Length: 450
Image 1: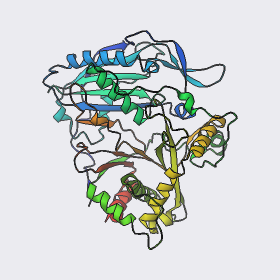
Image 2 (image 1 turned 120 degrees about the vertical axis):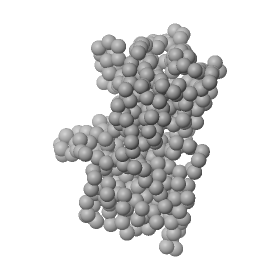
Image 3 (image 1 turned 60 degrees about the vertical axis):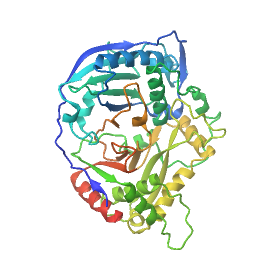
Image 4 (image 1 turned 45 degrees about the horizontal axis):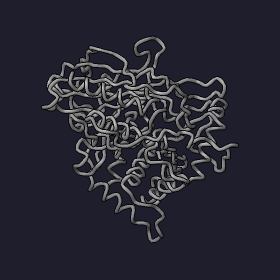
């Protein structure tokens, strides 16, 4: 049960990418100059997210120039309803808050080519660090100090296939709203109207006045406390350690087997909802926690994102264009993780999500109004599993594969779909760990799976 990819399949370390053109794309119509309020969730996520979307050659788009022209025009049209995407981050001197200045300064657009064919760059599922060459860095894009909130890079391959690499500031979108943006971009590229009209009212996630923190929030770390204790800055920090990358594939049968195990509660009533995400997250949490040290009394906290759109009262619009995810958590001693039933671990993961009521979410947002901090835990599960980026239909077809550009972060476990999302219904689990921890993680992964 379960399969493992090679640690290092034969892949080029240099994709031999040449940049041919760098330009700015501006809204195709005049937009109103304004400042966009950023919620306390948005402002924590002040870093770039890089994704690559691979496309096979298409008979109606024989050259990358044709795709580039259509993509450029669609992006210009998209920057009208998404005017903030053409803006720039700024600090409001009166409030001290980070905002987006919707100033129509534009998005970046890069045209490039690789000396390889798409088939030559190896298994697209394997997280080749060289994929970073397919995404243009946003810093000082065309002039010093100018940092667009998004940059598109279209890279053509020798076979007629191409990749669209997108770098975006996480302050602009979460995964769900970025998927909606891509659907709208694809619709505009096909000369259609928007698939979904985005909701830009981020005041819907403003803190209450006065702020009311009604729950303890151990999943959040106050940077003031961090300065006092000298604690390491946690799961978002890139590691300088030598890390092994491995992808563990769980088929739909593997996931069904985990679900069956999770039904065994030893006769007590089950309090957990047994979903694919919950059982995979519980399984990964156990393996990751036990791969670090041998202290059975050490506590381990797992973090994972919960979409709060439907949790709030009233619910947020599904079309909310911004970050509407908060960090749920579960904590257990390593002894319980090793000896406890999978059903109990699934219950703890489920409890983290059910804890996210309207009041809890509002309390977490209010916490962010009072403290400068970010999520705090031993391991973060970041799920790209069912975001569906590869299901977006562009005029040149759906992506062959869509993936994030992966960096050295040993405490972030990625869940992402197989290259054929409609295939076996499974999931890929990417871990990046020091060699000794990886050896133990791999052993535990299969031990608890069987």
